Length: 86
Image 1 (cartoon, rainbow, N blue to C red):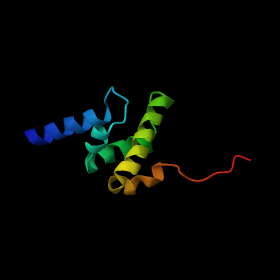
Image 2 (image 1 turned 30 degrees about the horizontal axis):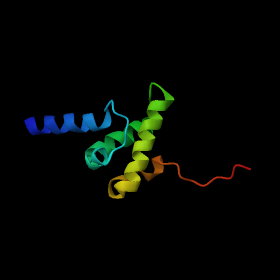
Image 3 (image 1 turned 90 degrees about the vertical axis):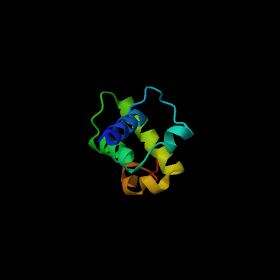
Image 4 (image 1 turned 90 degrees about the horizontal axis):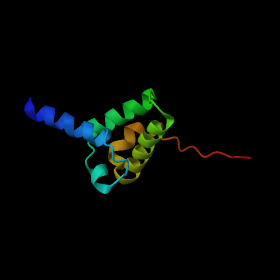
């Protein structure tokens, strides 16, 4: 039980860090549970500001590049459809 609480705290810290930088250490700290939490937040799109959602989107995009095995189930949240501005 105690180990579970520590894991949840670690995952929460990964997601809600005050440091907005996307570092290799931060990306490597993600696991299936923490990526699921991030994806759920993005899917719900319930953020206090548009910038908070954008921060999560950038984080998911970086994870898709550096840790694609974790992001595969959530690729639909990364809008990478090509578009024509004309």
